[in-house]
Length: 261
Ligand SMILES: [Zn+2]
Image (cartoon, rainbow, N blue to C red; front, side):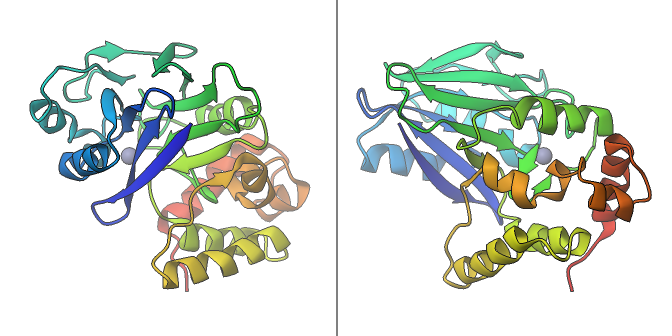
């Protein structure tokens, strides 16, 4: 299993998910099809599937253009009828196979949009391969997506009941490079969080070198991501509540207008 991150637009990430055995690959959110096809050609891969996390244009609008440029038609997966060129609508626990070896489980995570899907990938016959998850605009490094079409109950369910219960070593590949500003926000919420301090220092260095900060792991997210730490007493106290859902509501409201200094 191999993941190739490809930068798109100003701060989006597209990905190629590659089955090393067959060289078959799936494109995740291929908003810039030419860049995707350059990589496919250069690496001698065969693109067999498109996985879309959600219908927003900066994730989904490359689908029709990518299909036009291919010699054979390939399926376009997603959880929302608004996704351009959608052919295979999927939902919670549906499974997609890439090549011979990769098992992709769909995790339905409505809130940022009502049809958002995260894709959890494991190796079919080698349990020693570290699993990965593509989280689109649901979970970012040290953050979460805005609640455009949902509420705090749903995001709590997405982050704490669905994603946090995957194996802790799972690598997280998100939809945008927002890490530096998200980690600054984590320290605004939780100023003494050592994991956030260290990750921020590292993320700033990475960005100065023009390098990516992804992937993180779920274990790391649980250590610094404030939206996954809404069960912690010190964080609830900051928002004058002892309820994780209202903590999530207040935090998201604050973050919507918060700017790092
Ligand atoms: Zn979005």
